[in-house]
Image 1 (cartoon, rainbow, N blue to C red):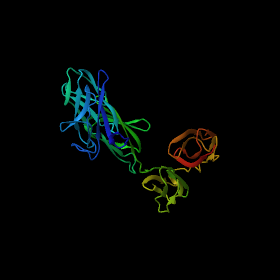
Image 2 (image 1 turned 120 degrees about the horizontal axis):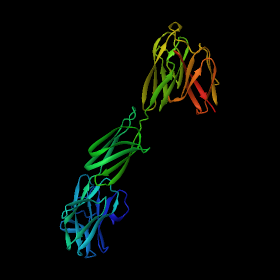
Image 3 (image 1 turned 90 degrees about the horizontal axis):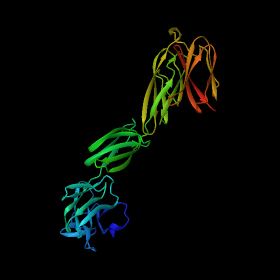
Length: 392
């Protein structure tokens, strides 16, 4: 009764034999920790043949068994299959039912009379008996151990997860896809195979044998809550003029700014700073969360008027209104054209326009979603970045 009860952890299968008249018989094989190759009184049961014309069994110590258990499949296992057929003609051996057996455990039927090795996972095995038979010398079941997958999760560096595919027996073609059904790796698994540079997420591993059997496994690469961080801001500024910087990040909970001039650090997504002396400074952004920290830098050149680097504010640059709704107006004084670029806080360019320096320029903003943006204006050697809010 043990083997016939519902059991989600018990690996078992029913193998059946059917003749041309539709007469049918089956035997049950199970694999579980603690079972042995010898007779296990708590698991194994002898065969009682109710039909003399047809029977299927596994042999043990010169006796026939209807139910037999073995240790879990960790290496190739070969099990003789006894056949009783007193009516010559066409017969079929099938996998009638399988419970809780890994889909990559292959089950081959060896026919030593025809020398054929047939994958019962792919199809039933049909053969002709010319004479009556009763014995276990012709047919043998070969069980191949499952493909094993293990993984290394993503680190704080991100996109560095790995998947290890181990195929102990045989050769499998594999395709690894992410949750967007994008193929990220393909190849042949024969022994140990490693797939690298995986981002966090769920993956589907599709496996196919050379004889056409398909199996699918699902796994996931876990995230360490990695951080990406970049800096958007003024690269050319004058002494005593406020410079603006914005952190373009994902995954960060804490942001700290160092301006490289000995001043106090600042915090927050947006920081302003006044450099007192000309020079080249390295602005450092430290972004962190509970598990990860990343550091990024940004070089700023501070030059006074004598260097010929003009301040865009002094060049007569105005953007209004701020916050903006459907448009912004940009006013520039003086001759020459300028370029306006609008970036979101992920650093992606959302809007670009050429400006006439002698006119008031009206730029539609209805395509921009509500939020905070960085507006950069470039005119000759001068550049200025401001923060702008879109509120429709």
